[in-house]
Length: 591
Image (cartoon, one colour):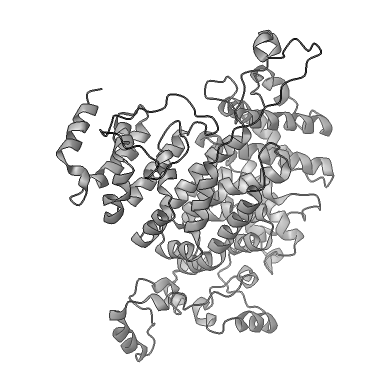
């Protein structure tokens, strides 16, 4: 698709999205036109006059935000109204990438509350409202009508995840939205299930009773019971005698004073009052991630992750639940869609292909955000064979994306139809990038983030090196990458900074965005924490040259991450502290 020079048409298109002033069919057509513009803007180069920021700045103004809110709050069950809602939510997901826009959409009684009402309506439609919610004083009137049959859940979840992003304040705004509080009330009174439900749930693991105690909400009974002794096998041998002694003391936990205490059976005694007030929305999102399709499940995890990262979940219980239920689900989504993606040549982007690409682009980044600060979740990802899945996906992202273009038809066989021969008034704009190539560049960034997040221990880092991931990480440091080469295929330069960098994009490999380079630097930083990898793989692949050139990069963020890598490259155990290395560094600092 060619990038469109249609910025001048934006005011006319935007004037037709108000459902108060325009018929439904015109609103749908305008939303579809905006969606096509947003998709085209994602394929253009940075010098184009039609980029996503121009469109988003035009859309997310108070007047047009009011139109979006009117669309999202529509109570009509008609298919055309549901299509408007899906298109409006999709536009938010595609264009809301700036903090100012997110804050504007998250204002009280605004777009975020409208999306929260839509989300709650799906729980109402499935009969999953917290028992007794309708008897609450003051909020029972906020319970929305059930979602109609034609309603789509994935766009709503994706739009919510886009707005709350990494903001604890906006996550709090979601949890305290009137419709969420009405359908998922946080009660200080423990939920008491029926005898049949309780016996069935505990029959899966009778030892789960002391793990959860009385801190369960009604939504937790939709999930499998989490075994309390998940990490007991990882106790260190020197602690075994002390553990046996503590067993004999009444009221003490087997896992007391160990690193894995949050997984212990007496967790309920360690949960504070603030932890007990966890919103039932969180276990419901976990349930959606496991029970819905891949796209809806992924978007449920996209909403769940910022809530967990913002400490709105009961840390001990939810960490165990995420490690046993969400991390395997996320990696299984990745494997299933990777198999489907390998069968697609990328020449046609239909709805199925677009969904497959979205999952492959989002799943690794979500995994990275979910497990970044948790050793237990990193262990869970490693146990689920995340190393092989992520390595294979990165290899797929560096396949050549050269397209075979068919010649354009001409009525005169002696004349071509080249764009250069046409007047400028007949050309919509410069040629855009191949959608498959843009997809693979996004996958590179997402996978590199996941690799960095899952490389917290030497065993994990060594597993990646054994999977031969280094050529792909090193190639991600280049603005214009080429075919990744292993050690035997690479020509070693005589001097560290002698090898010139490519000055234009290589056919089929495109141009790595700055976010890809930053993610690759983070990955190199994690790998450099291993002395073995520092002295072997990083030296063999000549990681010194690109990293030290980044110290003079015009982008300040790339300079910062490169400096963090250098701090690990010049340790006492590093062979990169040699005199000739510093002489090369001094030479580099001259220009």
